[in-house]
Structure formats: C-alpha cells, structure tokens
Image (cartoon, rainbow, N blue to C red):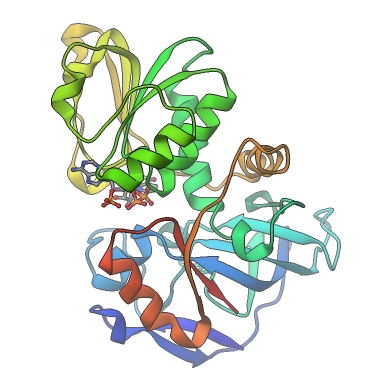
Length: 301
Ligand SMILES: NC(=O)c1ccc[n+]([C@@H]2O[C@H](COP(=O)([O-])OP(=O)(O)OC[C@H]3O[C@@H](n4cnc5c(N)ncnc54)[C@H](OP(=O)(O)O)[C@@H]3O)[C@@H](O)[C@H]2O)c1
C-alpha cells in the first residue's frame, strides 16, 4: 500500500510516496481504508523539522486526520463498510494517517457525519477536537462572552460555530476582510481585524488560536486558553484570578461523535479551500504554505 513518508526534514519535496506493508488491526484496533485526509499546521511543522523535542524518529508516516471506511472492526463495535472519522496523535504515537490503510485504537474513531462527503469530513477531526476540548477547558456557559482570536481559521472557525451552538456570545479577532465576512456570517457580534478595537471590552473567556496574547481582554477571574504551542506560554495572570493554559489536543472518539452530531444537525459547516490527490501531496503542502486559505487543504486517496 502507499504511505506518505519523510526520511529527512525540509520543504515539501521531502514528501515521498512509498510502498509499505499493510497494517493489521491489533487487539482493540480498527483497520480503516483511507478515503481522505487534510493538512494541518502540525504536519507542515513536522515535515520542516520545526517540532523539536517529541518528534518521532525518521522515517515516519505523516498525518493526523482520517476519513474512511472500516475494513476490520475487530471487537470494537464498528462494522466493516462503516464510514468513520478519526484523529491519530501522530507526534506521540508515530502512527500517521497518510496511508491507504490505517489501524487505530477504537477510542480514536467515530462514525462519520451522514450529511457530508468523506472528503469534507476529513477536515473535521484535529481542528474540531481542538475546538471542542479547548471550549470545554474554558467552561464557557450560554450567555457568557467569549473572544476568539483567529476566529476564521481551521480551529477558530469551528470553535466559533460550536460556541454559537452552545448559546455563547462570541466576538472575533481575524486577519483580513474575507475572514471577517466568515465570522459575521457565523454569528460573531463584534468582528475586527484590529486588536485595539477590543480595548473597551472584556470577556469571560478568550480562545487564542495564534498567540495573540490579548490578555487585557479577559475579565478578572476569567479564563484564557491558547493553542499556539510554539508561541510559548500564556503570561501568568494569576494575580487577576485568571486561569491560563496552552491546551493540547487529545485523541477522543467521544468528542468526535459530538462533532459528527453538530455537522449532521446543521450547526457546523465545514470548509474546503482546495483538494489534491495523494500523488500531488507536495502541491498540497505548497498550497498550505502559501496561506490566505479559505478552508482546509484536503487530500483524496
Ligand atoms: N495545541 C494544540 O493541540 C493545537 C491543535 C491544533 C492547532 N494548533 C495550532 O494552532 C494554530 C492554529 O491552527 P489552525 O489549524 O486553526 O490554523 P489556521 O487555519 O492557519 O488558523 C489560524 C488563524 O489565525 C489567523 N491569524 C494568524 N495571525 C493573525 C493575526 N496576527 N491577526 C489576526 N489573525 C491572525 C489566520 O489568518 P490567515 O489565514 O489570514 O493567516 C488564521 O485564520 C496553529 O499554530 C496550530 O499549529 C495547536
């Protein structure tokens, strides 16, 4: 079977399609035939060698997101032929999803949304779980006010929609006009590209997706979560009673089920910027690196 591997770090031309043995489902695992995946910032950073400590050894198969069809569900309850999505924490397990067949622990797998294609569903796992888990850490309740910095990015755009579905009032800091239109269309109140526009406002919670560190915006006693690991820690705000974290996404089939339900009930719309075939994996990474994306870069097997 084919797998996307790197045996050295660098620009997209280090991405190779190699022939590797098909995996078998071990105890507690589900064997999935991949239909689609998507490119996340972590894949780009891993390929570049920018992760540093904690990078799996070379050669490695890349990829976190997966949408596909169950080949062998073992004792998991998933049936052969079932459409599923999954997220593999490739950095900690070394188990990349960019391969024709992938064996993953059943707890990382969920039924795919019925109402979208598997190509679209492949945009959901990593960004969606990051959004849900970070919103849960922030413990924002209906009626509270949330600021999302980067509210039209992959994670931020899903967080905005999930927060609105939970009845949370959201303001949005975005990078450019097209992003502002997205945030407005998805229910954000104040939408701005200028952080100074936030200076008279305070929020119960801030969800920071790019290391904005708009810490003045959080109310005393509030919560501030960043996911921008590489931007470093959130400044210590304990003197103001503010809890802070740099949240790290976890494998979580239950969280994926919640996301599937939100897609199927129309609360969560998925966005694709561009789609590439597996043979064009280098072009997919090049598109990702160009930036100014209007959704996810997806890859079809
Ligand atoms: N800790 C974790 O577990 C975890 C999980 C997922 C992602 N992440 C990290 O979180 C970050 C976001 O991931 P993502 O997939 O959502 O990436 P993304 O789709 O690129 O989203 C980032 C968003 O932030 C915007 N942005 C960047 N700089 C900005 C600025 N100065 N002012 C206003 N907006 C700005 C970007 O706008 P443009 O498109 O215009 O640049 C984009 O909309 C990445 O660094 C990723 O590695 C961490």
